[in-house]
Amino acid sequence: MSTSKVDYGIDAPTRVRNLATGGIFCALAGFVFLSVMVPIEAPARMILSVSGFASAFFLLAVAGLMLWSSKSGKLRERERLIDTLRLEGNEKVLDVGCGRGLLLNAAARRLPNGKAFGVDLWRKADQSGNSLEATLANARAENVADRVEVRTADMRNLPFPDGSMDAVMSSIAIHNVPDRDGRAAAIREIARVLKPEGRLALQDIRNIDEYVKTLRDLGWNDLRLSGLNFMIFPPVRMVWGQKP
Image 1: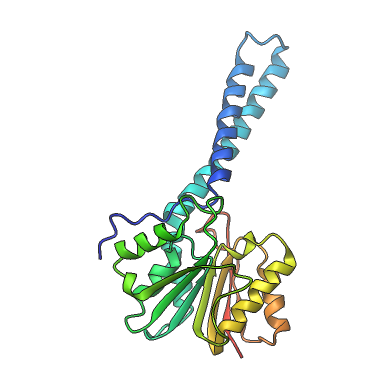
Image 2: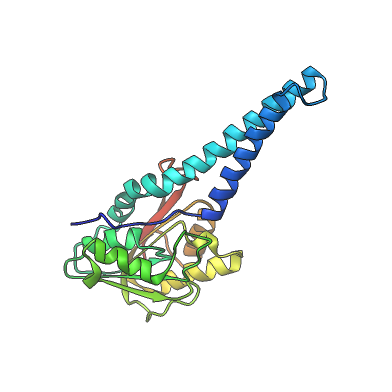
């Protein structure tokens, strides 16, 4: 498999940029306050300088961790999420909020006789360079394009019939729906398109307890919830289980 041209982008690129810019600004402020040219008393100047450097370190560290997560952490962890689906190779698998295909293509590699479907609205604020074309390019680079189908769709209104999927997965996507009712609608749609006994794996940086509550309200009892996983930043939790 050739992956030389694969590029899964950077999550929340505007936030990463703003954190890095803020860190650089705070570092410069620290140097300015450290300068004897600033007409403030030495103790106050030192406090302001240290505060600037401390803020710079924090902001740049968070930006660096987010960048590392996008380029390394998520690549390492995607197989673990897909493992929970216990794929046999002939299933139909849906990736909700597939972005540029990180999970989608990894699942497709495990489906020699199946197919991986992805849906997204392709917002570049959520992932750098996010587009249907970029996703398909990554599928070609990972040699799974013949097992991948991608559609532009809102996760609150999935374009698939009831009970049409053997498994559904999603990673760091559902939280982008801005309101609680909308997120609940997305979970209900995911449950709708799953077959009875279909398998589910959802991973997100927040709102996991909401997803669990919605699934339990739908009658799901076979659910497991993970602790925080710090191999992705911000840390994520996962819920996985089987539709009754």
